[in-house]
Length: 127
Image (cartoon, rainbow, N blue to C red; front, side, top):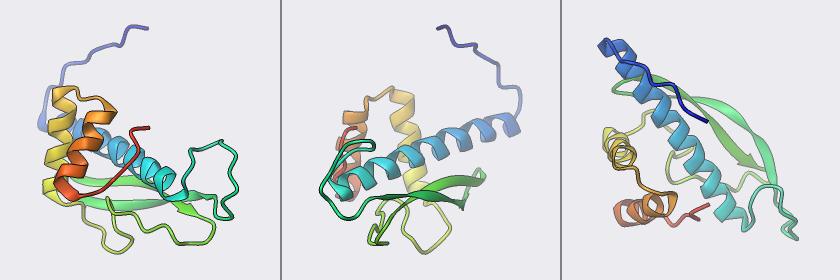
């Protein structure tokens, strides 16, 4: 499937694209972090008494404007994400910058996980 490319003509369109990329990346990172926390991936069978319990929308402030992400949660409310802590509503500019670098270099998920481990000491599954 061929993707349609579109020219960005102004700062507002660029900011919207960056917000979308950051929101999608943070969402996938949170899901991977929950997978690692629970010890199994979505739709896998597990003996773990704690399991996924949906998500809730959360707004974060960024230098590019407000983004909305889906915060995953677990049944026992023990999941405490490291990428986006439970308290606070500002995504650090440093993390956004690193995500943009990763996207611009076309890194694989394994490379992105390795970089996050190097930067933050966060251990996530490449999935």
